[in-house]
Length: 219
Image: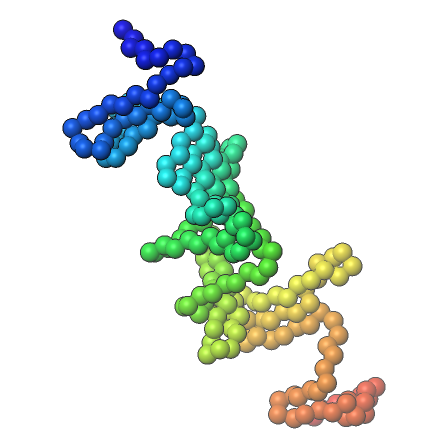
């Protein structure tokens, strides 16, 4: 059986009261809204299909969840095809709509490719003083704070540090620091310097010019 109140396009407000004062279910005919007021709650035992849902300042619309902090300031989660997900913060006044992730433990981000793209700067701030570079779980290099000195370390035994670049379209190794030979430096090309110290002896440009073209033998 169907209970009909009013006629199509001409309805009435309908209230259902329970045993709790001030709690009721209201059909608001002017707004076409079903309202739970006071302490009234909603319990759904089975599955429910909704086109959209708004709870306080959280709106769920299909695959988009929008949370509004204040007028015009939002955090939106959107799920697209293949599970691609975007997290977007917006501030209407063009202030800093920051996104902060805080974990009481470790934060793991695992992806095929991870890109950090900033319109300004990227800051790595480690209170432990170390940034570790690993491959497959094996630590291969460290960037460290050594009493405010900047330390660059090759972490694998006897493995070198290479400085590479592109010269005329080809990749070249400009400098090799040989860690199996106490850090012996091999430059790929010319070294230009304002001074030269060999052992504890300083060699001047004039002294080098005297040696230039000379044949020197030792006994």
